[in-house]
Length: 142
Image 1 (cartoon, rainbow, N blue to C red):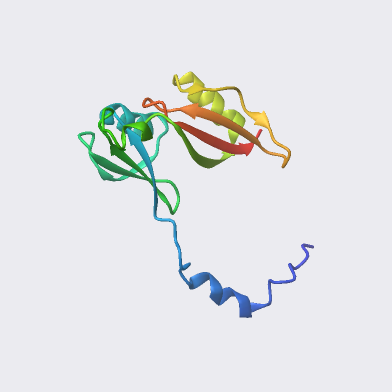
Image 2 (tube, one colour):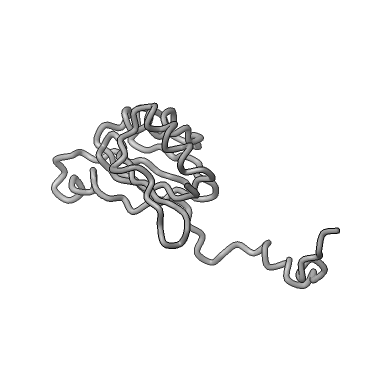
């Protein structure tokens, strides 16, 4: 017989889940030069669901489970913003099965810096490049 979780019968705490956080992360932005290539990569290769935008750009928004991934086209020769394209984006996607997804994306031609690496916390991490050269990370069990 399953054991009751200590909080199963404590209904006093459940109302907290209905409050919006004061700071809800709406979107994270990735800057690209070739917008059409990035649009295809995120939408088709990675398979993210498009929320808004077209392959023409200059913006597109993809659903990543609450927070959106926003693509923005930046002219590569732009004096202030050109350097934002093709960098370590410091974005981590949590995935259920890192090893399986790694194999799937490698088969689709996605460029990884290395195979998934075991981490001290027990899971794994793998870094990959998008067509603009931005480096993003996948984290999950390996």
